[in-house]
Length: 140
Image (tube, rainbow, N blue to C red; front, side):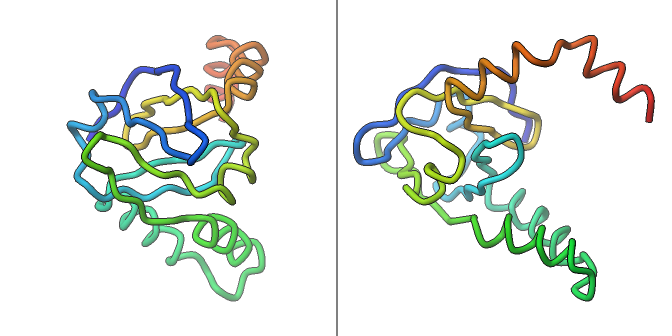
């Protein structure tokens, strides 16, 4: 599955957000959400989450950093159902942990979908240019 593009979206007072139809077509009725990097929530298909979870579970359980990463990601993940209107109900605890309130940006990033608060999305785009990101990667 390849997700691309970004969409401005709203979360209602019950924590429901409409999944953009372009993304919904590629997903089945069950998705997984995790609080992850850059203060974002990440949506994955069930298959993609299974692969991600497997990678995390393959980390060395005797290594403290590995256990911490597993705990922070898997402990802040949940299974969601897409309802008949194409909405998901985002858990309040996960929304609060990344500072998401009402206005969000839903961003397709290849095999996953990121959900950013409007403030976080704007800060990230103002802080890092495409050129800076490419230069940083090329140095590795």
